[in-house]
Amino acid sequence: MMTFKVVMERAKQDYNNPNISNANEACQLAFEILNEIIVDEDREICFVIALDAKSSVIGYKLLYVGTIYEIEIRPAEIFRAALLLGAHSFYIVHYHPSGDPTPSSGDTEVFNHLNELGKSLDCQCIDSVILTKNNKAWSIVAQGEIEIKTE
Image: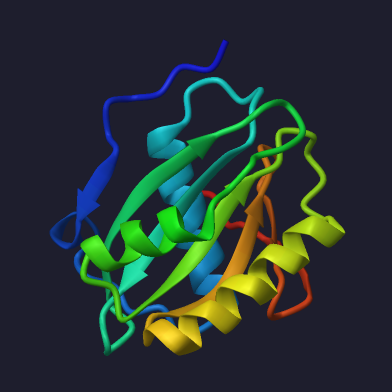
C-alpha cells in the first residue's frame, strides 16, 4: 500500500525559488519533490511543477496515484492545477515503480498533447519527466536518461 506524506502543494519559498533552465535541473528538482511526496514506491504517481515567466519554481501539486503500471490522466485537471498555482509554464512528472525510466508510447503521446494544448492556453508544458526509485530519470524533450545526483 502506498503512503503519502501530507504534503500536497509546496510554495516557492521552500525551494528558494530556483530557476530551471534544462532537463537535468528539472529532473533533479522533480526527484527531490518525489522524495517528499512518496513513502512507499509501488504505484505510479503524477505531479506538476509550476514555473513563473522567469522559469522560477512557484510550486507543485500531486495530481494522481495510479496502479503499479499506469495512471489515467485528464489534461483539463493538469492545466487546472498548473493555472491555479499561477504557472506560466510547467513540467509534468511521473514515477515508474518498475525502475525503468523509458517512456511508453502513451507517455510521449500525453506530453505531445499537453504541449499542443499549452500553446492555446498560454501555459506551456515544457517537458515530461519520468522518475524511478533507482535515481534514474528520463526527459522526453532531451530524449534521454538522466542520472540523478544524490548527496
